[in-house]
Image (cartoon, rainbow, N blue to C red):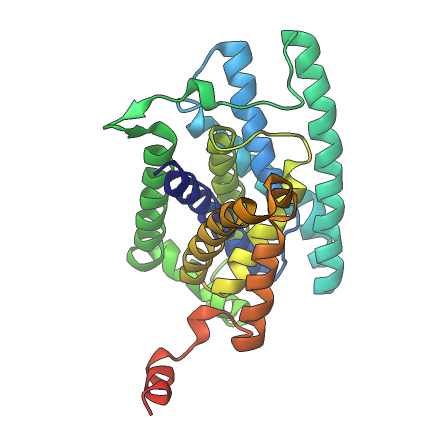
Length: 304
């Protein structure tokens, strides 16, 4: 039971992070290599309010959402918009997010030392697991992460299909040039997308310490699974991010445990081989992700 619970929690977090990555890719065509560091930033936001203000990490999730969103906005405004205005290529923009990730790594590391000097507590690695409490007979981290996923999906569905801004956002995602001709302010949709991407990562980061130990470099480890989740499902599809997040998150957790039974716990250091293997297999079979597969045609072919 504990194994399944841990796998579900990790998969929920992968969905949140993959959704954020997919949203910014759809709107700006930029694969954000700093998405993992966005999550770690959210973890440190929760840690800061816990150690300085004595606010429980669950109660600080709205603040993780807000500060994560502001970081997403800063990423776009500082690192990307000037380059986009100069007609930079996708490769250049991708390298810019990689450089931004390295910068964030340094900032988070420095802040970790600063926070430790103030609180006199270890901040270079931390866990929130001892602070968790049961909810309706289940661990709080499972209930909270599942509730966050449910609310996020409901919010995105309502926003994209029931509001005028959502229609404008979808138009900007599908064809930015045509959307501008129709009078839609594509820049506003990009700002919103980067805010939402950072906010979702901040939420995931606030919950992540309940699942695993956090270090300043944790984001660079997570980014492999985040990219795998988005690409496996379909990098241009929000539904694909949800599907890919659950496939990668559950597979990585369960397969790592199964392999550790045969090869010992040392094999866990190489757990990222699992999402990479799933990624490679998906690209060979369906380069545009699982959502691009025509399942009816495939079933008919298999039924022959």
